[in-house]
Length: 131
Ligand code: FES
Image 1: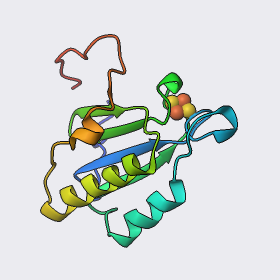
Image 2: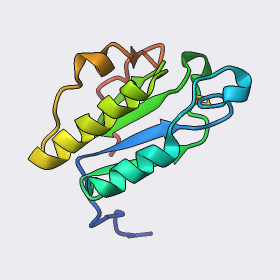
Image 3: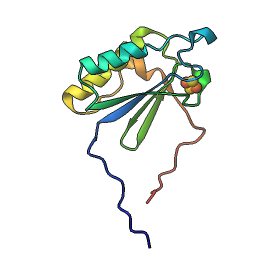
């Protein structure tokens, strides 16, 4: 019988922010607003956020028609955002992450981001145990 240990990490964070820059999000040549990836990375480093809130830039997350998609993951929760069309939206995202990091606790999304919440899946995931 295989008695392998469960995977573990010492790199625990409050959450993870996944910013899509795939086949559509940020593709100005396809008519989508830009995603300020370099600015986001700079802000994340300057504000020393990576150890508290991990930033990932991803390929296509799926709901391309929502335009400029961001996935927020914390604990067993995922919050999807779409339609981040302005630099102000990304600025609010950085500020929210910085506020969470500073207080070492998750804060509610500001209204300016909460209004971008996107229902990603046709059904909510049932409350089942994986293990
Ligand atoms: S490219 Fe972002 S969701 Fe597809």
